[in-house]
Image (cartoon, rainbow, N blue to C red; front, side, top):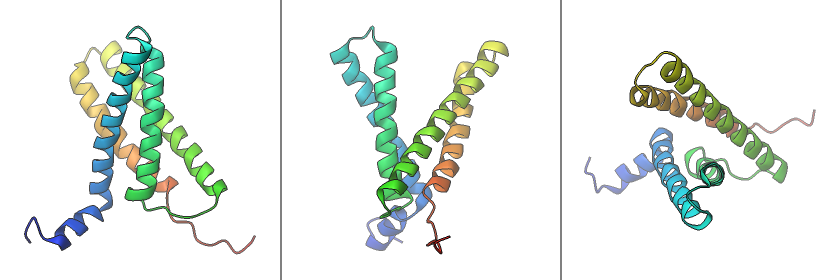
Length: 146
């Protein structure tokens, strides 16, 4: 298969795991861009506010792109969309807290390298977020009205 082969490109773009990684990289870029925009316009001393705004914006970007391009969750009513959004933000908040806990336990308490722990924690969090997102955006079967 040639790299410029249209079928190969379609196959890559239809691969859920590949799309999840692409969206993840783009989400990280959105996070950094928003952070530095906030830093520029709100001030470098507003670290917590800048971080919160950039996290919220990046998770919103991740929600929209994961829903549309990764898990292809289309349609549904507003209630379904709202449920997915709340679950998505809650799961990302929980995985963020888990990452903080991992960093605290293994770096602050155990004295391990912050770089190594950050890399290991990131791998765990990315995998966890993938499965949580997959569960949130799973296709629901039509209910029988019960």
